[in-house]
Image 1 (cartoon, rainbow, N blue to C red):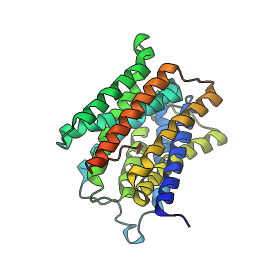
Image 2: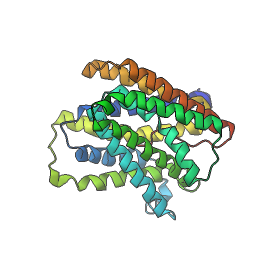
Image 3: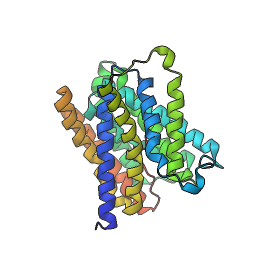
Length: 293
């Protein structure tokens, strides 16, 4: 039998693996329109949620007293997921993953304005260090005017607002309902891209695109279960394994080798997010800043 902390570690590890494989499939699927890939993420992402709906709520599970907050969560989540999909298709995996770790920096800044939180010296220092890391990673993009470097930053901004809205929603809404509305919103938005031309996938591609959606849905649920069974401070550092997976997958499938600047910048961004996370724990005001997309 596993202890609660061991279960928390296991769920977090599975979540990281699921997100990493999802990123791999997103990058592989660059011959399919983004909107079509989003459809599979939304539609297949609903499947795991069906098994979590309580039997007594089968005909009323969708009811909520906070529709506008769900809308804001879905809207910011849509911005984040479209941005990360575009980034993954046009930048090295390790680069995108490294910049995505900067989400806590933007969450800290947004919490000042949206949650009226006070930020002390150490968190401001962490924000500065993180921004320096982003600049170091993105410097090749800035110097060559590669616009795709802006998309991981847009992802961080969207994800930061997602973190804040989930924190507000989780006081009254079950996690499966939050995920359900997000998956439905992804699917609905994807329909508007049909006129741009979808591609009929073969059986193998259909299986991989469906797997992408299932992994996206499961990753968020496993992430939530991890926080449920274990202390946040114990399992959150595991998310940085995602960078190792990104480096390995990028090298195996696309012969991508992270530059020294990417690794230095990633180290600064990771150090920044760890400082912010530790200060959140110290002030007992942790915001869940993992992916949720």
